[in-house]
Image (cartoon, rainbow over all chains, first blue to last red; front, side):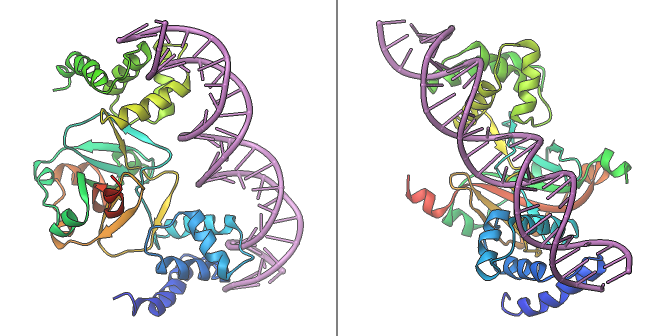
Length: 147
Length: 147
DNA sequence: CTTTTTGCAAAGCGTTTGCATTGAA
DNA sequence: TTCAATGCAAACGCTTTGCAAAAAG
């Protein structure tokens, strides 16, 4: 499942770029190629260190901006993390989150079915589970109106 | 449900502090009191601005460290956000995340049942949904062994 | 040729640290 | 009276910005 994707992905990568009027530069190729090999949700800095091994002249800045660009055209995802900027939640009841990708709002919602979600056995064995939450991403009411 | 909690929570807050050998200072009281009123997952900076209105001599630093302390004793939660430090995900297949609260690792997992989760009607109406993900928090294998 | 993109350097923003002072227990 | 908590200031890490040079289409 992983093997067959690399070459194919490079094709579709070029396609994707063209569709969004992005120029296909060696830097972008290198970044994308490395990215799809990474199995651990790298930060910009991690990517930079990796890519520099094969592309010593590349700048951190290009890596960083390219990743942002890629996520803007939906080629990759920015994933939820626990790091900076931290946000705190005093709500200790079981609840779930809606994230607005536009304005960054995080909105609580409640749902009994989602509260009772079954965690895969696999996960229970490998890890010590402390909490489970459903995170939905999209546009909140006011951001939807603005488009 | 919200009304009846405030007074009660202040009691249990003091309790919670004593249990963890934390001194009950005016600053901590003010921070906790404000925090449970906030409905929007504030950042440290947001909290600082709010609390300063009623407690002008408080420092940002105290607010920031107090929030960290509160989350360490489980009084509040640090929630997943999309901000700094950003991490990127080239995996565009349907998948879910396990977050290690100790080392910050984010581990993919796959589960067909979770993929097919039903989103509450309420949410579908209020927002434009782009993606749904289950986020499980806990300790990963290697962090569990270290304790 | 035109328009992006790159690389660099500086600035910005949020968090963390060390230390002397203050205050809760 | 003791030890934790506070406030301050400096340091740190990651991200963002502006601009001139380079390169893709």
